[in-house]
Length: 414
Image 1: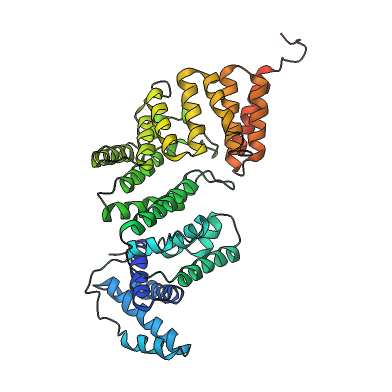
Image 2: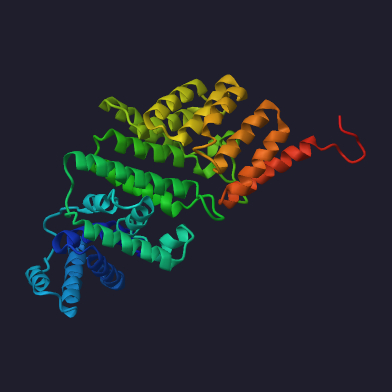
């Protein structure tokens, strides 16, 4: 292997595996992460000049174990910890080939953590992003993100969770948490909720990488397959979601020739194969909806009745008000805007203050020809979103409707 980029990719891939080995061996997440970071820095210094070793993972484990042992000794750890450190002789190479990355991912997504803490810890420990990079992605100070990650580590340590793959019902519950965290990471990267950028590809790309790893390890799990398919089918549209100036382009107006057909083909094959496994879960249904959109040559060619049926099934399965919001859009496309507006009425309480409820109402009122109501809801949505591209798009829509309904100077209204 040659080139700094190749070494950087290798280190990114190996980091969670090495961290998993140290956490399993020493049981101290925080100290293990520090030791792994020092080993990675040592590799970044030596490998470009000396070449990548024959067993890069073993080299990193050996270096990190030495760093960890030095930390324990320098801190004058208690006798028990000193004994454990003395017994942990660094291996000459990685002879086991055991990959602890998946276990580490399950640990980072422990149900005891809040989603925000699990996301941060996953990106730090498994994704290899620095605290500064994670803080920048979520537009918070680095110190705030460091505290969030530190608290997450302390909570895991206090929980006494052993380092190992959970079994039975606990594994099913933890897997659900892992998939949810990856889903949230992807969504924040694909449609950032804050700031000036519509996309944060470092987040969506990392979520896809981790989902691929999950699928390679658990190929028979339908929901793991469904989540990966959903990510690929959604990310395929990203090249067409922004204009030359970074402005948002909605689905109906996108140039579908710019969609990534390779991702669509891969995602469609995954979801088609995954459906043969029996019970269907929520990520599989979402992937099926994404596949219907991606299969259509234009918005008019979209199989909206099928999408409406799938959203109905998904709403019954999850009870999620955002799913109900999307079902209202599909209902408007099938039965007309009045039907969609009717379905929005029960969402006033569960989605109170959420910009998307106003944005959808604006769109449906515009479909119905009620320009004044549409303008009011576009403006309300723009005032509530924290995404600058979304805000600019919604404000533009309101201004467009105003221009279309305002008579030229000197001409009275019709």
